[in-house]
Image (tube, rainbow, N blue to C red):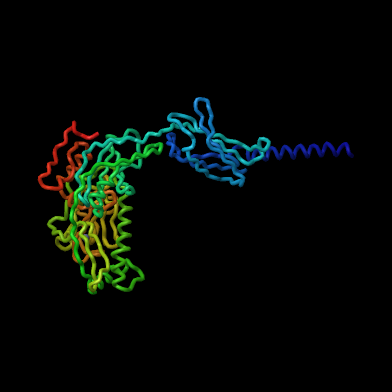
Length: 461
Ligand SMILES: [Zn+2]
């Protein structure tokens, strides 16, 4: 009996060991999967790599090293005891003591399996990299512009390498994106926000760009801002007016039953939401000029209100609010036909709060025209339109009393004065600068100031 039982037990034991071996081989025979973000081959000391590791047996260790000329130098190592099967570690490269040039980045991850006598499975990912510590050099091809408060100007520049996230930075936080042109230069039409003073604006205009390695250039640019005075009116709000607003716009303030509260909400929260929506709608634009010459206003119209007219609102002698009017109010015949101000593409038609029925046209390079209080639309989103093409008719939809067209221009997401864009000479100057046939920009702030002529030899580099 004994002599037959022992071999049987041995067979079972051997089979069990084999099965375990096969099971553990099948279950986990490889080190963790490794994925690295961002997927770049140029890095700067500011680069942070997100290393994601996945393994059924848990991730036990991560290490990173630099391999260069046959030498390996480890600069990062971390052990994990919690057995997480999917983890992402952010590794900054600033402590890696990197040197300019090419190297291999070796990323090693080990799992928590019992393979290799308990050491686990290790996988190594080797990534060819180049360290780039030089921020891109930008060279400006346009002359410093005269730029009026509430207006805009253009800058054209080239970069020493491939760049992204580039444009004009205002106040250190507002980026007006530039557009890459066919000749390799970048063009940015940027606004001088009407709320800023010339002194503040002059100090706050920068040009910025990032390269593929994450090096960022930020440098101050010269502009010659001049002031524009805007009208400031006192407006007395009557109960009759509040009643008309409530009748027309109470659907914009659901739950509000008091006409005064309705008006204040329309003038504040609703207006702000509408402007945020406009900002979103104008964040992407065609990368080239779609327009052709000066912009066309509503024909045979009287100007009823100007850009940046400021209104202080009173009720029973009490200050209740304020509003800035960010377009031109143009009144013509009742339900007059509205021509598209220039060639472009319709990006929005529909109702938008205080604007009523609104049409928005993209003219490229971040320039948009806006038509509000319309009766109807003869075009739809996506349509290409040509200058003078009828897009609809005037009315008094939205926060408007009396038939008129509210006409606006938006540049880089901000409303600017349409007056400049209605002036063919001013527009030609912008176009010449975009096209690189340099001429001084803008109007001289005072009569008699010579604007001079640019010659090739005088062009700034
Ligand atoms: Zn208006």
